Length: 517
Image (tube, rainbow, N blue to C red; front, side, top):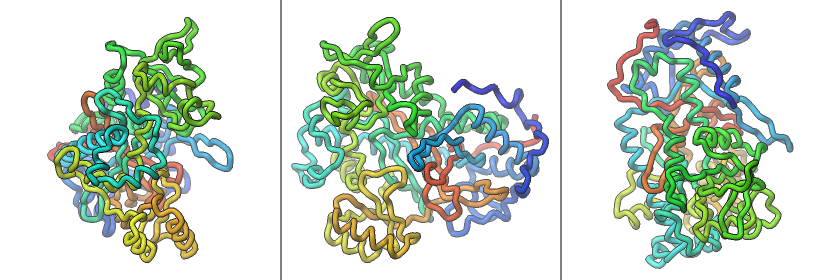
């Protein structure tokens, strides 16, 4: 995954390659007066021909590009993705298919003043979640005080009894969190879900920015776009802070399930950027002293921190699944005895549960004594009889989600579902109501997207990444995922989604002259 050579040798407008408009595609010149997001809240355009303040410079710049120039930039982005080897894996009919990362060159723009509030809200949320995880594996005060129901914890698929009594450094269990944000039709921002087990996608956020800088270098020279490239350093510092040995540069390893995992690109990317070792379970061994060692050509080398991208149940065959070939025998023993740090800690997934999600605002009030800065999406808990009755009678209006699935799998989008699909889901809800929640079908915000030669609105969400140990870091923006299919609300790349670069920009940004050299 070596870095590709720069596509353009100097700032300014790159020359258009020959035959830049592929056969069969229509010209793509942008006319904001004819761009119509309908009734959706659009992130770039407030009304026909009226860009939002933070996006004015971008909109003016894009409008001035010719058809050929716009096509050249799109072709250059596609070429950069291929040359840089940015891929994702789709599991299809028993095969692992690597595909080029789907990317759209029209970025999402968020005003810096709004982002400052979102950033505070994300830090607040992860702090409360870590208090909750530490509490449920400790004194369980939140249950004793009847703020969180004991029966929900008893039926949690991700509660690990093996973790009870463990006290990780700083009381932090979830060191890396990806909380998905959405914006509704009125422009309000909500947290849709929290991902606390092995959240992925940050490598694509970083590579999206690299591609955009190569394709639109002049935009970055003339606008104050908040950088994101410090993330690998911040991640290393977060991991180093939880090392059991007080070293400036502890030995950090990224534990991957291997090359066939859908996120392997990210595992290798982050290890390389942090200067950490990329290892599989077979590369590690737990010694008689309960320390973890890495096999090297020079012998065994002690590992201080493991950024694990392997699910809990496969981490240690001595404790969890005995048939696991992905983990390390004795790893849980090493962790519970303080000889190695694991991020995210085993058991952190107890809060990565869509039923638990509904209680996060109460957690913020209980542990922090504050009101939530970013609200949840209104949520119906199907284990509650009245809520279940309502959901069953309104399935045609709601989105129903299983508590512990991810990637857009296993959910029902009521307005788009057939009568048969709704009937099947009703049966599932009645059989296992604890495993489901329901939410209103949100009118997700849109961003202009180049689709088959035309500019069309497409729905988006946003996954910022939050790091926490002795301090908290929040990415400036995050991974914007876009539903490339018209009318779709499913943004996951495995189901036809793509991505965009996310810009946090001062609303008073200067205009950019596309003709400037």
